[in-house]
Amino acid sequence: MRIGILTFSHSDNYGAMLQAYGLKSYIRSLNNQTFIIPYAPPYLVGRHWLIPYIPQADKWKQVKSAYKSTICNLSTIIDFHRQRKRMKAFRNKYLTNNAKSIKRAKTLNHLKIDYLIVGSDQIWNPDITLGLRKEFFGVFSPKISCKVIAYAASIGNDVLPESYREEIKKLLENVDIISIRERSSIPYISSLTSKQITDVMDPIFLLSVDQWKLIESIPCQYPYILVYVTESNQELNNFIQELSKEKNLPIIQIKRNKAVSLSPSFKWNACTGPSDFLGYIHYAQYVVTNSFHATAFSILFHKQFLIFNHSSRNARLKDLLFNCNLENRIFDKSLATTQIDNPIDWNQTEQKKEKAIRYSKEFLQRSLAINEEI
Image (cartoon, rainbow, N blue to C red):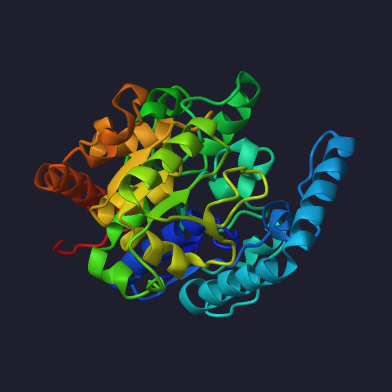
């Protein structure tokens, strides 16, 4: 049987690309006719262009945003192109095997597949996809004959704005089997459909540490404190600098995002690819982040880590920490820098995590009608 995976594989984002690799690799170990659909619509990939394209209702706001981003990209043009090159190389080698990208959703109706897996990542978050996109619910015109399975799909928050309720309710009718990434979203999704809803682990947990080591790039220097943030956070900035002084360790920040402003004194690498991202986390002495996937890999690699709350996307982080018995890794300013050195009972964490991973694998095998010893 042929299994196609539709996800954010063409987004130049570490987490998006690595979760796609994890899902493809695991399912391919069960069925070698598994492939990632090379879907690269402009509304998703355009944000990574030299002159960014991110459609918005407010056209003036869209122009201003594109102008600021273009100036930033031009100011770091060498690093910009180096990083784009590394992202493309990883995608071609590990995800799509140089397959020609599909730019329009209507072209997807030519797929010859038995199963369509939509997910993981925030494929049902209208803030990311600029509205709910039918293709991420397996809705094509004309309709194709295949079973649609949502694996670890995410809406980004516990609920969506009320204006999306009827639309997502109708789209969910097309999804045969539904699993989501955030346990806290189950009540909301369940209110939209009579189908059973379950929560599963992010695809990166479907692979072992040894499997991830095979594709990592080892950093040139260590030890160090790694910081990776997805939005500015002055409290995090202050914490990192205090920790650096106390531990006498340099700070490395990867991919300094144009929207993120941390101390210019930090050493930073803006041209890293997904393999570098893995290596930097694996060999870090400490990891400080507000990123879901940086947190997830810190858990996989058993790092001393601390996370800071994101202003709007904390549900997935909290659910991940709950599944791994690590709720105490959220920053508490009353504990200062001592919190990051608090010992972690990795045996207890592994027991709880492995139970969730086993369930996630069994879910995929049942959904795909595959019998396999785990």
